Image 1 (cartoon, rainbow, N blue to C red):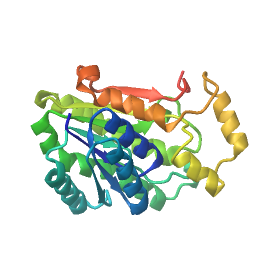
Image 2: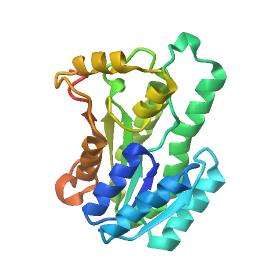
Image 3: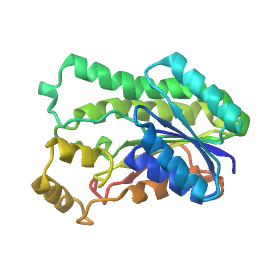
Image 4: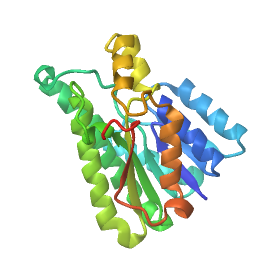
Length: 250
């Protein structure tokens, strides 16, 4: 294996993805937006597993900054064999009627356009390594969750880009797959709880709405990402989305 470039690797889910991929034998380049302390802690965990790690600060909406970060990763590790997109802004729960144009524009720029910037910067390297892309998406693409539009709409763009990469870049050996994230007790959910957007009653009702009658964990997402990133286990899998949602979409 080579290097996995984990974008958003300092967040709750991204950090677990980075650790699981390191366990699988990948070196890790991870990004953060503002919390360098969290990124350093994750890098320390990766090095403790015997793998190389580097951290890189980036604003995904800044095209030049993304290109510079891709070059820094290449300089530190060589061309990556896997690009994992695990980033995205904190998404407040708002019905679309209460979402302002400025809010939607901000989320589209940081999420959908930010992901396009990453693809633009990294595709030459992925062609060189015949690598793969795994994007964290939303399980609500299958079954819409009320007040989740600021996540669902930008992630729909991410999903469309992934389909395009799978269709167009397969001739270069590139695979592109997604993991649809359901209700996970990490990252966004913890932040929304702290902000008062959701409470225990919301989480209890959400758990009851899934066939498995529980919420997921960051490790559930990370293991699905590791499967899709593996050429040995998923080498003939592309253009797919695994929804890790406890059956919410059924």
